[in-house]
Image 1 (cartoon, rainbow, N blue to C red):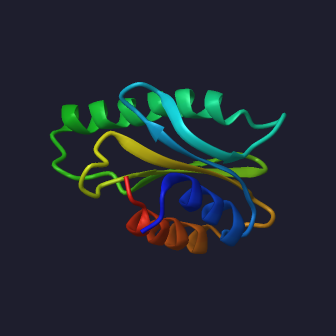
Image 2: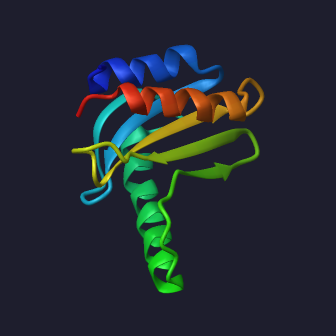
Length: 124
């Protein structure tokens, strides 16, 4: 089982094209841990902003009466992918992993697969 810091470092190390990663509490919008980012990607700002995205999607699903769980949310930009993976393991309710990828170097399918594996090994 990996702790938060180890899991985030693993995400930015093994996932090709990773720019930064964060573990976020979407009830508060606070990043519980971050790795990577930089002057062009403030992961704390991204954590807060993507919290709004998650909350909006959860509300929309409730209004539609969809009795489903969100696996992940993908935002595609001109040069980046932003991947949000809601955690479903015991004790992780209200948390998501956020991963920013350089679109020119990333394999989206592999990134989703590896992020799923990191989630499974994450110890909250």
